[in-house]
Every structure is written in C-alpha cells, then in structure tokens.
Length: 139
Image (tube, rainbow, N blue to C red; front, side, top):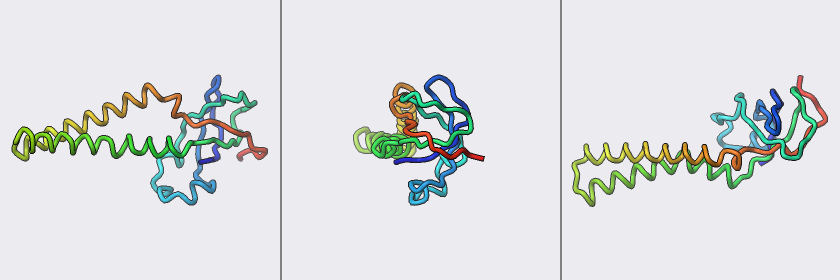
C-alpha cells in the first residue's frame, strides 16, 4: 500500500511523518475511520538517501503482507493464546470455569508479551519505507 505523509523530523535514515489518511489507499480502506495512523506521527526509513527536509511530502510504502501480519499479531494472536490456554485448562486439566478463565487471561498476557517482543526485535524490518519525494510541499 502506498501512502502519503508530511515529514516532521529527519534523523539519519529515519524520518518522522504525519499521515493525513487522504490518499487513495486510506480512502478505500474499511478501517479508515478508526485507523491509528490518521493524525498520528510515525517513523519511516529513508533507505534510498533521498534529500528530505521537514515539511516535504513523501510517498511511503507499507507492504500489504506485513500490514496484515501486524494486524494478526496485535489482534488475533493474543486471542488465540487466550482460547488455547482456556481450552487447555477446562478440557485437559478439568479446571472450573473461573480457573480456566484466569488461565486464559494469562494466555492473553503471554500473547501480548510475545507480540511486544516480536515488535521490539523486528521493528526495523516492519518499518515503512520512503519511496518518493513528491513535488508539492505541505502548507
């Protein structure tokens, strides 16, 4: 997915961007109304060493597969660990619903913990890339 953003800060090969969510990809996305990128700052990599400065408008590339996988890791994976440990507690260990729920909540915490560790170790790989500086400058 290609998105546009306005550069707020440039530091080495990392730029901090503000995303308005007005590009074609964002307009057609079903999650546009509650997207965490809209109106928030985030980092992108300038691997091509483009001559960028604060205020420039750039195109950034967010690989669709990584975007989907990130959504899975944040939303689905912790839920799966909850279900797995809840089912393990009630079916295998024959625990009461209360204990199984507590075990499931522990699984939810483990799922979020694994997601946090994954994001910490693979942050650079999953960071969007600046692909092009646009001619226009933001107001």
